[in-house]
Image 1 (cartoon, one colour):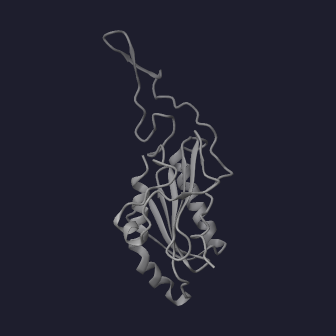
Image 2: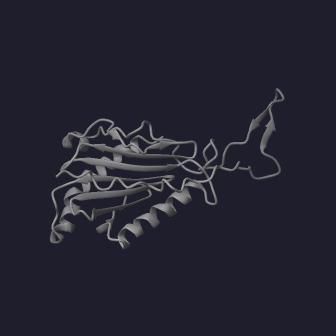
Image 3: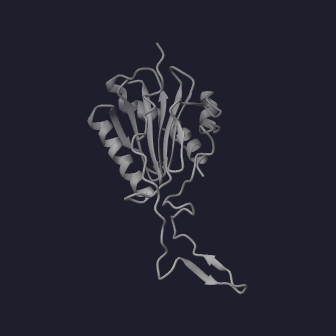
Length: 216
């Protein structure tokens, strides 16, 4: 019986951030100096702050699903935009995406959550906190059986084996976006977990690069 790739984890759908509050510029006012014609130029947003009112690098995924187009996806014959999930959502405060490419062994999945709203914490800080808390929870409850940090990819990344023993997962944090790429393989015996991560490491990084390329 074929499996869906991983669980296509629903990334915090029940805890959308509160609506963004206006960001006030430092100093006595929120406007720039008058120009020669008497108009007032707006003050530029501080570094890292979106012009739409949240703190983070990304405003959206370019489409309903990432487009897998790199060498890795081509070699796996999993190119294209993928099939979106029924619970996907795109609102002013967040974008939630769950997409699949194929079924069974060799299938690929991407679950992505992008925060577009500052709440008690800036969007990028809240996303980083949620990313780590979620990963730690999956390790504690046994959803992730074996894992290691994956350096040099975005802000933070972890490579692991899902509890079904047949799905390699790469969880990635990039500013105010967090996502997991899943790749289904044949069942991996416990003695081969580390070897499996080594074997599929470049595949997972290649797929993650396609996702990052579609953020803007």
